[in-house]
Length: 463
Image 1 (cartoon, rainbow, N blue to C red):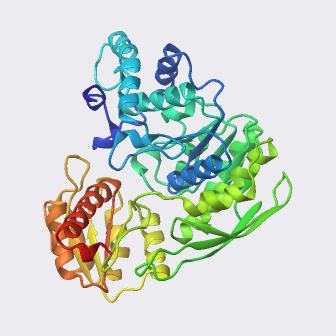
Image 2 (image 1 turned 120 degrees about the vertical axis):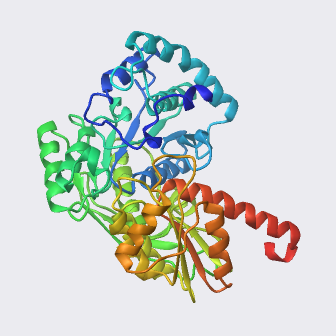
Image 3 (image 1 turned 90 degrees about the vertical axis):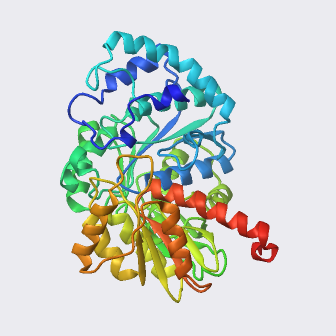
């Protein structure tokens, strides 16, 4: 594991030199060539998008597993264990197998390091993400999966996953995020994400921004790829769950497809994931599954219903406690914050709302705070640990004060922020943790540990 941690990891660096030659598909292709090209012959569904790509990938994979296909799912980042990124049929890679994959890849990586001279960053060897992508493809090939669902890490055009030749390409949404790397407009970001489109491979798009839609349409025309678009070729209606603070509940989706492969519809599909944005993600997933069905894949309606209803995808409007309700969400840009707030408004009732917030540098922090601060009765600021990308607490406090005109309680350690928020909450209240995958992961673990300690000392609390 130390071998991986010592690699360049752009998930844990402040600056990513995206346009300076550090991300090279040629290097990824060379790594895979030396490993025997495990991606060749793997049926792949390839998914990009500003937000929703992880949830959409998980939905597609869950349905394919329910349909009887052995399904690999490659996602990033992970919440608790790196092995989560390399799942088969919803089960993370066993640790011993993960170590074997590292041992298989490490000698090849070291050979490439030697060839490159090891100078950071332009001529360095494979990065952390390139290596884990290769490990995922190796695992899926060696385990004989019928299909691999691959989530893009960043962008699309230069992403390590873009060495594949998929059966379907998917672009879930376009909004402003990673603007320093991908561009400052939706059109520029769409151009980067349209880089996953391959000649003749069908494309499913959930993109709604008019300029971004036209960028994707133009890319499909150039590459002669059939394009299936939300609100043109397919649509959905979403009915949110109610009373999530009291008990588990499911939203429902009606889906209508009228695209080039022929009409298809589903009514009253229950969703395990919460929020109107997940209704949109489920529609994109269903349109993707229609493309696979048209290509001969047997995906019965029963598998669609059971896969989407039973899916659990952590840190996506995830209720991890009740009385008080505690919701963890990994929203980390303005669009995903807005989706979170709408989900809370539709599905959660609380006497008082308490926010724990930490986030990442190079994000639109003022934009997120302008939406969040008025929606909560109490706000507790913090910063996640062990990652230099965290917005320093003093900077976050200054931004929050500039946005709202007032000072907010702040704690340098997430666990302190949790205890402060918990002390403010009664059984009828809501505590929401959001702002980053990293704060979601750290406090999700703390809340679960706190619940376990409470159950040990007070058995009645477990109920």
